[in-house]
Image 1 (cartoon, rainbow, N blue to C red):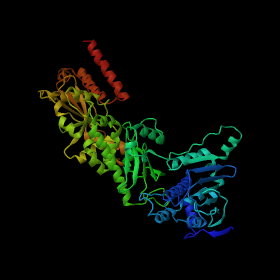
Image 2 (image 1 turned 180 degrees about the vertical axis):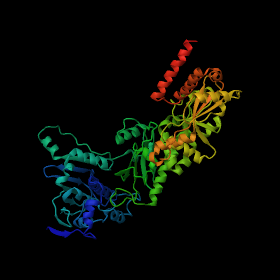
Image 3 (image 1 turned 180 degrees about the horizontal axis):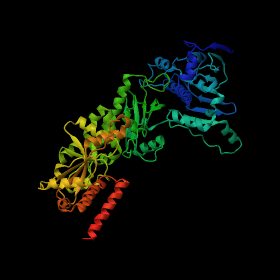
Image 4 (image 1 turned 30 degrees about the horizontal axis):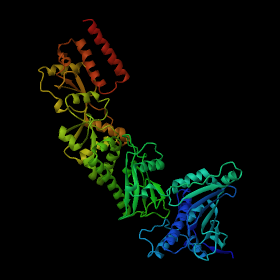
Amino acid sequence: MKREGKIKVHSENMFPIIKKWLYSNKDIFIREIISNSCDAIKKLEKLIDIGEAQIGNYLPGIDVFIDKEKQTISVSDNGLGMTEDEVEKYISQIAFSGAEEFLNKYKDKLDSGAETIGHFGLGFYSAYMVSNLVEIDTLSYKPGAKPIHWESDGSSTYTISEGSKDSVGTTITLHINSNEEEFLNKEHLYDIIKKYCYFMPYEIYIESDDDIKKELSNEQTTEQPKPINNTHPLWLKLPKDCTNEEYENFYRETFMDPLPPLFWIHLNVDYPFNLKGILYFPKQKNTLDINKGQVKLFCNQVYIADNIQEVIPEFLMLLKGTIDCSDLPLNVSRSSLQNDGDVRKISNHITKKVADKLISIFNNDRAQFESYWDDISPFIEYGCMNNEKFYDKVKNIILHKTINNEYLTLNEFIEKNGKEIFYVTDIDSQSQYIKLFKENNLDALILSSIIDNHFIDFLEYNIKDIRLKRIDSDISNSLKGNNELSNSKDILDRFKSFVNVENLLVEIQPLKTSQLPAMILLSEEEIRLKEAKLLYGDIFPEIEQPITTKIVLNSESDIIRAIPNLPDDKCKILCNNIYNMAMISHKPLSSDELTEFINQNTELLKVFVHQ
């Protein structure tokens, strides 16, 4: 007998809120419906295990069928089904969670680790975001149960009657709104199911009425259907049971990255919370791209979202991976997290595991760690600056590549070179300085990535007794000679009189080479201010003054020594040429500067020819 009832909510305004605003993305309806199907199957499996249900040769599965002619999507499972009373309880009373009641009822017979997917009993109603009518056909596993048919058009009323279903389980049929017909496209719905349900624990199949028509007309050969999903994701296995090939295949399958990962961390925690997952270190190419990483968050194999910052610290989002945690305090729509102290514990544990893995590689295979460094250094530096606990754990394994092609920790570098630390930001433009260092058996750090600009200041702040200098900002004491010229003032005065460049400081010093007439030095403080201006733009509008340039004349050079003895016309050409040669070895000349440099060299050639 067919009868009517009223959906029980605490407020007349609650139902439209659930239908329209509970979920931020309409796609989620298919996740919620299929999740409920998985939940029903999992419950029946547990009942079979404890002898509460007798079903022989049980093969669980979920079928999604698209009927374009009827404009419906149906999701069928062979889970435990529902009686009429259960339909009234779990469907007609919004926000009643069957999962919690199920666990409480059988808590003495179930394992302590028993889990179900459902939390709040609201997922079913997400169907009304895309449907104008939803039908339920269900048959309970209980002996003597009758099939039940339930339907509602999304108002606050429903009808319930005896149904016609002849197999245990539940079928949800959604009558799709005319403006939501995109969901009737098999390829589109397939992609959505793959996004949200790819790692759900039971096989999911999809078919449409078009497929059946083609089979009947022999347009295609009937093939054994294949499930959409991978029901046994690699993170569920113990790390000791996984091979490198499996890790790499899982990475390619999940992230569609043709390049293999550098290495990975397999998380497998049972206490104080349940956490499993695999984090991969992709090739970063020594750049910082915060959008490059993708850490997918799951709850009992149900996809929640990517890169949720409450669980995944920001710096770990440079990685790629999957994390499955059944203890996540999800909000009512299962799309984000409630503010909870356990979330911070989970986040801290993940950070600790990453740090432990890096330290283990460094300690056990230093050569391997060094081979990774160019790719992982931006990640580690970014992590140190954003997470104090991470920095405290990894600070002694931070490497720096040097101009002598070594990878050294800061302590190792200081032991070899002292506390006067020079660094390089551009190997090409600073090649003259690098050459001078190498000729004198000196070393310098290569800090050439974007993030290094910040990391230099970070190191100086945290290590109080060091100060880093860019290689073109000062002359190492080890490069300076001892011979002083008696006529140094004459050289300086003549040079200054012939080289008219604004904001140019001129010094003369003896260097441990006679091949270099002069070199350009810049102010370290002004270099950093300029870099800050480039990075932050209008945040530092007051940084407008040009960087002060210093040219150091090498008193060991015969060319410099000749300056006092040359006639004015030749000395002017020589001095300007010395300046431009120093500048061109420091940075590219502008078009006007280059033209002037060519003219000066032409005049020098004339002098040489007419001697």
